[in-house]
Image (tube, rainbow, N blue to C red; front, side, top):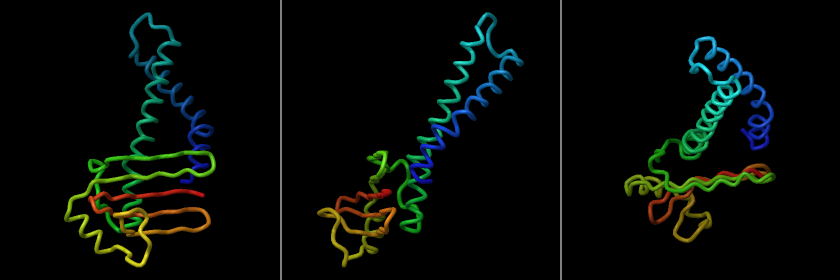
Length: 160
C-alpha cells in the first residue's frame, strides 16, 4: 500500500466506517444492557469510540512494526531472518512527498554469517562496516537490506 493510499484509507475512507461501527457496537451494547444504569448515551458512545479507535491504532502499529517488516524480509531476503523480538530500532518518516521506513534488527552471529555470504561485494558500502545484501531502486521506490559488522540487519524502504 503506498503512502497516499494509506492516508486516504485511514483518514477519509475509514472514518465514516468507524463511525458506523461505533454506532452498531454502541446500539448492540445498549440493547444487551452492557452499560451501567444512569450512564448518559453520549458518554457510552464516546467510550465505544475510544475502544474502536484504540483497536484500529493497535492494528496499525502491529502492521507497521510486525507484519510489514516481516513481509519485506521475505521479499528482500527470501526468508524471515529476524523476529519482532529482535527489533532494536525503527525510523519512520511519513513526510508528505517522500515517506520512508527503516527497521534495525539484532541477529545472531550465525544468522549474520549466513547473510554476509550473500553480500554484493561489487556494490559500494552504504555505511562503513556494512555490506549490501539486496537493493532495488527505480523511479518510484528504493528498497535495501544490509548487514553490519556488529550483526545489525537493516531493512530500508522509501517511496519517491
